[in-house]
Length: 399
Image (cartoon, rainbow, N blue to C red; front, side, top):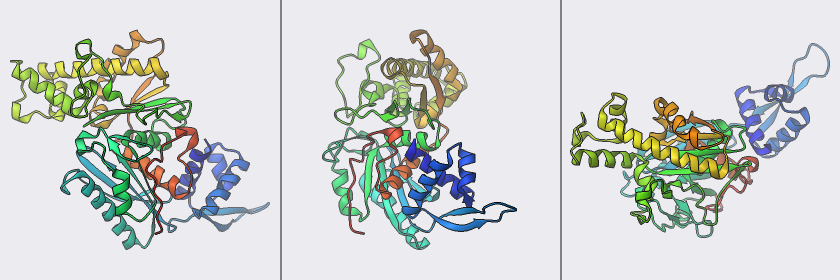
């Protein structure tokens, strides 16, 4: 957990600025020698500085270290199917300012992305700190060789040269990766997967995807597509159905748009509901299900069945200790968690802990902060958490 522990040491120094290495070791349960080595690396990276000594009533005074919040900043962006969330963070990962804009508000998703980056860089200039790295999460599969994004229908990308276009638009080192991969990094750093070597982040929102961390390594697959659970087939009647508009059969059902489409389908078939056709949204369906609307309950039950089958497949394949439900729909399933577990339990020898994300809507942008920090420090992302974490979109520029 070396790199992750460095993050935690940096967090502690920032939150208890100034502090001693002894206090850091005691608070985090690390050895004094390990903390000394990590502080030396952080000092060499320009992230901490010596801050004199701590007054002592006897014995050798303790040397203090302080966080250098003025050393620079990073930009992190979560480009989602409906919203683009951009943030500026200091070099300890504290978010200083953020903004959210509709994904297609700039005319197309890429213009919106660049607009969010530009807004954060302007904030950095106003604060007098240089932007030293950038990380972007996108809802698609990134080719590790070409940096082209595919199967991202909600942002209108299919074989889109996102890395090449971004290299022309910015002049700082950057990384682009799948949004759920970055969410998994966030959970390993500051979320529900902290110090867990085997977990799955299952995101169900506008789109559907997963990031699988097994034995402390992110599974990426031959095409960088491991965890693309949207392509699962969980119903026999859907076997053989071709991918349509970049959506697999599972994603077409188990997603926000899938919930909405299924509710409309049932109403068109004559099902009775308190929902009017013009007010059907994923949120409205879930709220109506909570109010025991029969149609909405039916749609929710189908979703829980589909999710249970997907989770069973993940358990059988990678045996996680923890499954984290994220995404707008996934995070809304807290009241149905017991019912979901009950659907999973009979079919597997051991049920992992299934939890709702504690990072709200911020997991991908927090993960992007972590990836940008690691890029700024010229290392890969935390190896013990994500192994060969893809920095497929790295491009270096002279600032």
